Length: 242
Image (tube, rainbow, N blue to C red; front, side):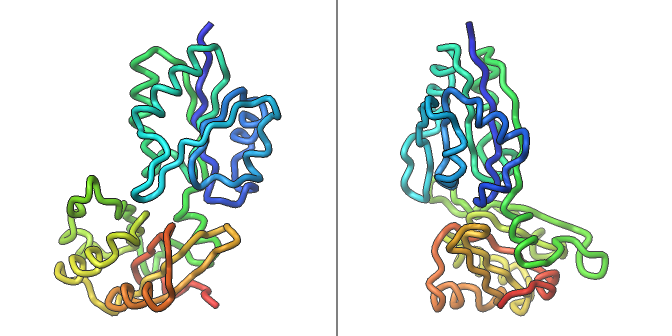
């Protein structure tokens, strides 16, 4: 009998921020395929008998390619197992969910997706800022700063610089110089406030307020390392940063 795959958003790091539905499924799992940004405490919620397989990806270091992860999902479901694919944050937002859904659908494997708390929401909560605000921003844009195969960022910089509102950049640290240069070239004001948030809801959490013109220097002076999320826009003025 064919098993079923549950693709579950683990949230931004703090194990208490997984959804009730996600935790229920994790506690029943027979197999757990988990990503890099999933806490050991949360993994401990899986049954002792569950097979736990690390399939995480870090910048430049992948424990397993996406095609191999897809094959593993099909293999474990084919064994009749209840499989939980545990992804950091919300799998719908830059989580490569589409590729895994296409794989499962193509093979006729039943699956369910459980959303999670995305990093942008966690940063907003910790920094006590609203990503939208009727006095500052009625527009929220989320983009990824991850380059595909070391190519240039495929982003509409002219539109991003001119549309106003709040710009959130996931995985932006490695391409920070290019982000800064191209947004400035496109006309964005160098004094635009920027919040750089590292490891939010984890023990190594750091929040740094800077500006678009100074964000590369701020990264270097403060020795920031991934994972870092950027919030760019006037709502950052509301952030409570110690």
